[in-house]
Image (cartoon, rainbow, N blue to C red; front, side):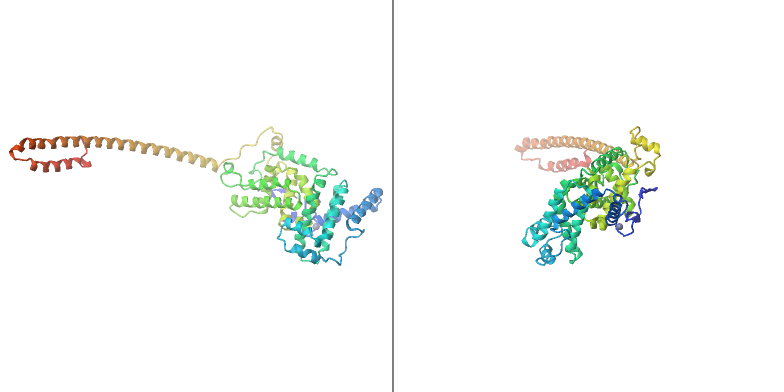
Length: 447
Ligand SMILES: [Zn+2]
C-alpha cells in the first residue's frame, strides 16, 4: 500500500479508497475497506460462524442481550416506527432554526416537549449502553452505529443536509456521555497498542524532515517550525470526547499542514507532500493515545464523516500515516538496513543535514556586521578630527578677537588722551573694523 520513492512517501489516491470499489475512503483498520463494506463483511463472517454452530451458546447469549437492548430502547424487539402524534417534520422544525454546530441550542431544543420522543430514545440508549458496558467493544460499536442508523431512518424524509446536521448533534450528545465507558475499553488491546506506538515514535526521534522529503521553507532549522500549528492540533485530539470533535482536530492539523507546505513549496502541494509532512508532524507530536483515538473515531463516529468528504480524506491519510510509521524501515528513508538499525538503537547519530543556505546567510550577516563596524570606526575618527579642527579654529578666533579688541582699545585710549585737544580718533576706527572682520571669516581661520 505504501511504497517508497525517490521523493518521499508515495500513496496513490486509488489506494486511499475502499477495496470493494464502492468509492468511499477505506482505512487500514478496516483492512482497506470503508466502514460500510467492512461492517457488512464482518457481520457476514460472524453469521457464517454462528450458522456453522461455532460457539452456539455464546451466540444465544449475544442475541438475547441484543434483543433485550432493542426492547429497552424501543419498547419492542423491532426498530421504532414513526408515531402519528409527532411527525419528524414537527420535531425537526425546532432544530431547523439552529446555526450549524450550535450544540447548546440543540440541547435546549431537546428539552422542549416537542422533542420528548427523541430525548427519551437517547436517554434509554445511553442507559442501555452503560448497563451493558462490559460487552465487547465491537458489539458496543455495532449498537451505537445501529442507533445512528435508526435515528437517521426516522428522519429520512428530510433533506440530507438537515439530517446530517441533526446526526452530528446526536453523535455529540451520545458520545460525550459514553466516552468514559467505551474509550480505550478493557475488552480490546488499545492501551497496549498506544504504548507500543508511543515507544516506536520515540525511537524514531532522529528522523529529519529531509529524510522524509518534507518540504521546508528556506532557512531550514534556523527558523521556527512552520508545522507547529499542525503539531498542536493533533495533540489536542486526545482532549476531545465526541468523535466529530476529534475529527475536527485531524482536519485542522491537515489544513495547517497544507498551509505550511504552501510556505515551503514553490509549487502547489500534492498528495505525496501532504502524506510526508503528516508523517513528520505525527513523529514530532507523538500524540497521546493515538491508537485509541483513531479506533474510537472509527467505532463511534458517524460513518459518513469517515467515508467521504474532507474529513474522510484527512482521517484516511492519518490512518495511513500511522500504518507507515509502524512499518517504517531503512529503504523508506533511503537508508541501508544497517544505518537504520544503528540509529534506532542509538549506536550512531545521523549526520547533521547540510545547512546550506542558512550557513551561507549567517556568514553573510557576520561579514556585513564587520563591515558596518569598520565604517562606524572610520566615521568616528572623522568626527574626532573635525572636532579637533573646530576647537582649533574656535581658539584661533578667540585669539584674534582678543588681539582685535586689544588693538581697538588703543585708539580709544589715544582718543581719551587726545580729547582735551578736540581731536577724536574716529577716522582711524573704520579701517580697523573692516580688517578685523576680514580676519574673523572662517576661511582665514589658520593661526
Ligand atoms: Zn466500501
